Structures are given as structure tokens and as C-alpha cells.
Length: 395
Ligand code: GLU
Image (cartoon, rainbow, N blue to C red; front, side):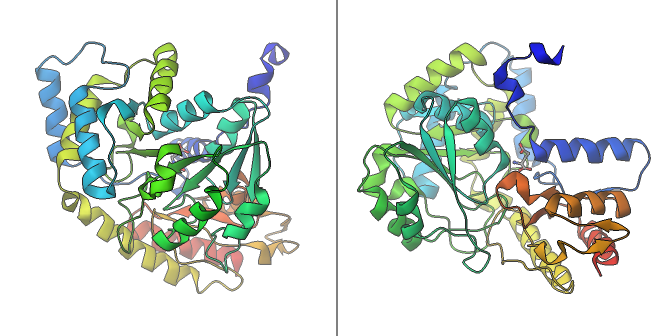
């Protein structure tokens, strides 16, 4: 029966983050002792003040279809948030609320890309970027980066990757999986290149914006010359521990917002009504209300970096945001560990799962085949135990 499936789905790669998380869950259910550092989601509960807003919404009978682009009150809250945190002016007609930032990204790609268009992806990049580009029958062009350059692309690399077919570039700061954060200066240098190519659109995925350990993140659309061709992606999943609520949004030129609404109107319609009401409360709150989670992530980052630094052969950058470390494990390629010859990062990832029950995600899925991703959105005890187990395999 498989052969009856469309070419579209046959050529679509499976999401490696979700696949690894499902595998870890399945092994746990079988009673295996698994520590999952695979999925990127906060291990905190959604804060009470947000949960209460959702309960109130249920009791107030918010149960009907919502406007396709989101409640006006929510779009007003998003507009204020953009101004408050990002110095961006987006009217409510430039904002579309979707079922997670993943849908926001998919909508944007679907309304802008034609078959054969090229999309530049600085690598490493989040697994679903390449898959979404494939779904649009477009082609992704990777720009490789090095750990020595903190996984950042240079203006020269960007210029070299541009062709007459380039339609978009996806930027992601803080980055999943490397935790890299671009400074305003670095973004302005990239913008200087893009100014020469007015037909290229920029998708700026800022979903990890509030989980960063340095200065506030700089939004790409805050560069005047980029504003009219940047689609800013954000959502509440990561910063507010609301992954399962599925609320993402864009701020974009109005014609792109309109097209996204049209697309969404034929696929999922408006996002869940209760989750939207809760999101109004989340976004109207001061970001200081969630700072305790960011502080804890920083402690965990420092902890895991310190522990990993003791493993000979592992190289890491110092992630400035998000909650991942992305060590280079290529030192182990060609070696035989526990009777298994290691050829690539996937072999290391499988070895760690099979031998000591630590679930990670291979860097191959992120366009960086020398690395593996570890999410430190786990308790400090779990992180200590996970690295103890990893150490027992790799040393
Ligand atoms: N973005 C998270 C991750 O990278 C959630 C899983 C997903 O949707 O890929 O793990």
C-alpha cells in the first residue's frame, strides 16, 4: 500500500526531534530507564496565572470558532509585545496567530515559495526548516558554519550562497540547535548584503528570544531596510512553558499576513480558542514573570557545559540562548566503542540510547553531521546522571 502514497509524503523526511522523543517515550513505557534529552521543551509547568486565564475562558464559554488570524484582542497584545520587547511596529492586520510557530513558518513558506525557488539555510538549522522547504517543492541551500565561529555565517558566505533563484533566507537567533545568538552588529552586516538583493525575503524565527543569557535579542525586522521583507516568527511555547498549547504568530508585511490567513483558512482555521485567551494573559505580563525559568536554564547550561568539558574529544560552543548544547563528536568517528564502529553522529546517538538510555538527536537532522544535540530542559539531577552515563560510554 505504501506505493499508493503521494510523492509529497514519500519524499518528506520524518521529524528527527519528534521521532527520537517518541522512541524515548516508548522505551520508558516498556520500563527502561531512559533520560530524554531529545525534545526541546521546557520541563516547567505553565505558570498559574496563565492557567487561570484558560480556566476563566472555559467558564466564560469561549468555545466557538475564532477569527482565522486570531482574536483581535490577542493580536493587539502581540502588537504591544512586539513594540515593548523588539522595538517593532506591527499593526493588528500584520499579525497572524497560528497553531504553533511551526505552522507560522509553514504558512510563510507556502505563501512565498514556488517550485524551484532556493531558500538559504545557515547550518545548523532546526529540522523542520528543510522539510517545509521540500514540501513547497523548493530547494534548500545550506551555508555550513564552524564551531570556532560560534556556528555563525559571515556576510561573505551569505553573498556567495545567493543565486538568481534565491527567494528566502531563514534566520534563527537564538538558534536551535546551537544556542547561537547574533548580535545587532552581526545582523546589520548580513542585512548590508541583503540590501543588494531586494527580492529575497527573510524569515526570522525568534521563538527562543526570551531564553537568552546575554543582552535582549535583536530582531532582524528592526533594521529599517529589512522591515518590509522580513517575517518575524514567535510564539509562547518556549518562554512560557506552553509547548502543547500550540500558539505561534507572525508579524509581517500586510500582504504576507493576508496570504497566510488565506492559507490557514483552508487548512486549520483559527487556533484553539482557550489557548488564545491564555496567550493574551501571557503576553500582557511582564517578561520578568518568567525570568525564574531563564535563570534556571542558565544554571543548567553552565552545569552541562562543565560536565561535558571533561569528556576528551567533545567540543562545544558556549550557547548564549535556547536550551541546547550541540557538541561536535567527530573525534569518535572511525573508533570502535562497545563493539560498534562509529561512522557518524547518528551512530553515537543510537549508541547512547541503546547502551545507557540517554536520548539525544543526531546533528545530521540539523544539517551538521559532526554534532549531536542535547536538550538541557531537564532537571539538574537528570543532567548529571545523563552526562555520567555518556562519559561511561565515550571514555
Ligand atoms: N522545536 C522543538 C525541538 O526542536 C520541539 C520539537 C519539534 O517540533 O521539532 O525539539
